[in-house]
Length: 224
Image (cartoon, rainbow, N blue to C red; front, side, top):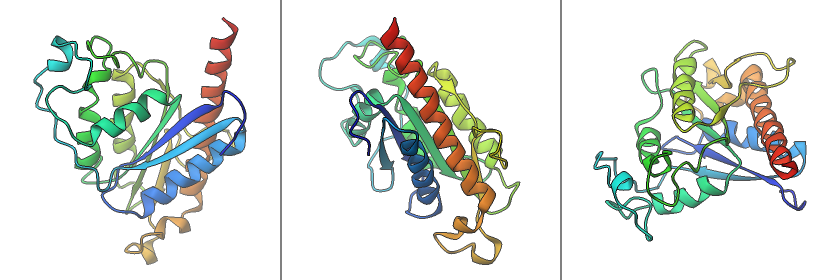
């Protein structure tokens, strides 16, 4: 982790209910981000977090509270909200479940209504202009990675974030972000994705891209 003054902060969210391939890919992305320089990273697995589903009560729109971002529930999202607010870039990753992201990750994303621009919480509009990148890993090369990444991109766009892809031209594999596949002969092993050279490369490229764009934005804001 860089100790340079005024670094950018990148949060890596692992949207898997267990530690394994998705965790490995996010760690590779964050290492690549740190290598850019003047970057601090944090890994946040959602496994073990206790989060209630959003019930669309809209209290975060209608009530101005000074205590919790979500007036309806007091759960582990109270740990998540400050991490999102502090970040300059966010990498969200998920294994592919039936062509999309995990239910656990979707629940967490739904609970970020307090960040929507017209929410009356102190977090309202708090994700706007942060940099977002997505990673997905599936059993087959064309097994739902791009549709899962698209779901995450849609989330970023709703929050008025800046969406980036897999980065440098020398990073082939998945243009939309980090797209990886578990190695066919080791598909039940929790580090099976380590055998996918293209997938690892695209995750690293994504991490670098998120870091570089976040640094540019921070520099631009300082110069205003």
